[in-house]
Amino acid sequence: MKRLAYIDALRGIAILMVVIVHTSQKVENLPSWLASLSAHGMYGVQLFFLISGFSIFLSFERRRGSENQPLLNFFIRRFFRIAPLFYCAIIFNLIIYGFGPRYWLGDASEVTWVNIIANFIFINGFNPYWINSVVNVGWAVAIEMQFYLIAPYLYRKVKNLEQAIGLALIVIIFSQILIFLLKGNSLISSDRLWNDYLYLCLLNQLPVFVLGFVLYFLMINTGILSKSDRAQTYPSENVLHKRAFLIFIIAIYLSLSIMSNYKIIPKHIAYSLVFLLLTLSLAFHSFSLLVNPLMVEIGKISYSIYLLHFPILFKLNQWFSNFLSINEISLEPIYYFICLFIILIGIVLPLSYLTNKTIEKKGMIVGNKLISNFEKKT
Image (tube, rainbow, N blue to C red):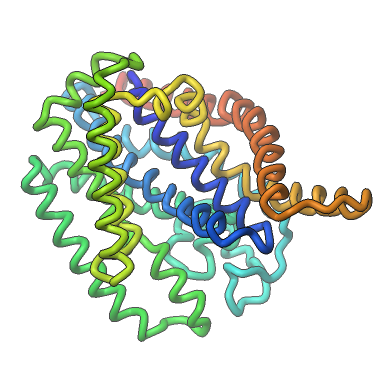
């Protein structure tokens, strides 16, 4: 299926945001401005979720009427897209971190076999102790898999922009009311882990996916999608027009930031609205700074980068810190951060390219063969 260059570029932006925030968390005493700026990288996951909501609707629409068993085929595609590399990540993380206590276990003492099995069958997102304690960034995969369970139903029910906006408003309001009520009524013994879980869970993240539906219908209604779907170029459009749109996005971002600071709108939803506008702008006018061959290629291997970077960063930080200590080299925090990030990217990019070719794509080939066999039998 033909890919959209600006969507791959946005995935590239999203994963770089995530890598930046995780790298900054390893560095003590960063300048406050850099620590604050890097912290915004956590919302790269919301950019992934927004793109996922958009892409799922686009995928359903492209295949509509062309398959005998579209629902079964959807789940086969999703499983073989996600599972092979995630299973490798489970094993890799257990080798790196072991089974002992960690932040995402809360007051639990170890990773249990039940926890590990839950990760293998993708039900870890339903338990605060399981959602992120085996694979350190596995929570987003868990939420994606939960979203896939309801995506086909939502696609059948949401038919136009008005319905998508209506669903988004309903989901935002009710999810935040429920989150507010649940915060004061912990169902587990660790209040800290419970509150963390309430941020990560699908209930809190579902509005972001639904905003992806809104994005999809906005592109349909404005004619942007049909135009972008035909061309995979990197056009140079009117610079003044592009700058005006970019200034508009910045103004919206500042307004939403103020609203989120005053608790009028949750930050992850505010960022998602900004990402929605950014995606629209890139679909209409490809800013070469953001949509370029390098960023597109990073986006294509973003899933591998996402699963590989955290355990590699953990070991790299240990090694780099020991290296500096042994050689009596002192680096300012900002330079330590820059060096750590550059080395990490230098290691993770080629490894991710390799795992994308040898694990991700081969998994998708197996999935497509299964689908082909099922289609022939019906």
